[in-house]
Length: 325
Image (cartoon, rainbow, N blue to C red; front, top):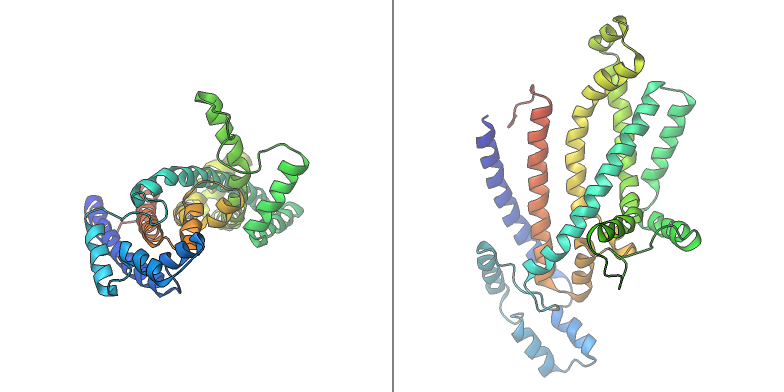
């Protein structure tokens, strides 16, 4: 299949998936007990019938469900995700304000996970069954088994409270008003704890996948030929074994990047990282339905685009793979 045709077909599928996500999310949110008016009345400290009725009328919650759905779908089709009930701002503006922070954190976590996982996998695959292999296996399983929120709190306790090496929370130092390279460095330091916490879970998967792939590739004929030519073991591992073992990692990295976009809610909340994850939590607790639905839609589109980019990258890395098959 022609690459341009494939991309066009996938974009059409992305639109259909987004519509399905909108419909499913809309009904799931409406099925949850309570509504925004109830939450806001509770925050105001009183909830008489007239006040509740005026709130529901203001936000259109008193209209029949099909009418609400039709109005929402019509607005989304025009690129309007509505306005946040709580923040009184367009949902698109609120999400776009937080999205770069989430993408930055996820990109850093993905790089750490890939680099650390591949290094651990290479160390384990050099001598299968050795003490190093066993140590890497135990370490990767430990990273995989530990809950991220617990790991984040322990990291904060050790490196922020006890040692004082790293800031415990936030995107940057409050009130510092840094600019230029100083601000970039400040953000980078704040990103270490949440980024590494988010990366360790996925690092374990990369380590196990790299180890398995390298052991399988090491038995191939071209690797035996390279060794027979007198090429050093280090070059064989880097140029022949690792290079071919990385092909399945591309697909896995694409899947992980998609999961990271929507799966960093716990870590962002533990470290008070101002991203889409904390925004989603706030939307749930305040029953800010338009904001929550907007986050679902943006996340679904990003996941679809990440998967499309993964398929294309996989076909470039391995020309034997044809798109659409």
